[in-house]
Structures are given as C-alpha cells and as structure tokens.
Image 1 (cartoon, rainbow, N blue to C red):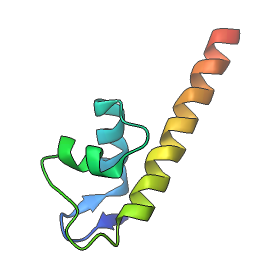
Image 2 (cartoon, rainbow, N blue to C red; image 1 turned 135 degrees about the horizontal axis):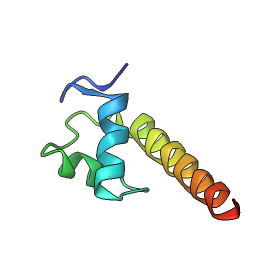
Image 3 (cartoon, one colour; image 1 turned 180 degrees about the horizontal axis):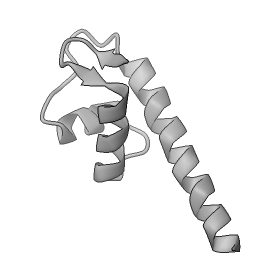
Length: 68
C-alpha cells in the first residue's frame, strides 16, 4: 500500500528505510534518508505510525531473543 503518493513511497519502503537509518520516531528523517521530503504532509501521520510499529516489533523481537 502506498503511504506517500507525492513521493511514491510504499509501506514496505518506509519500514525498510526506518530500519536502514535506525530512525524510530521521525517520518521526516526517514524521508530524508530516502532522498525526498513530505510535500503535502498528509502521509506523515501514517508514516509515523508505521515507523513506530516497526520499531516496537523490532524491540520486542530483540527482547525475546535476549531471553532465549
């Protein structure tokens, strides 16, 4: 699914860029990592949620692995 039509960014690409950059809070920082910026801004709330959810999932996976 597309997150940002202006830049043609998909959910998968936003999540991947957040992982690559290590960014877990700022959608704008993830966009900069991708070499673009939010134009109309309508995508930012959804992008922030994706980044946060992905960060939470990575944190939880790491915590589970540490217990094993």
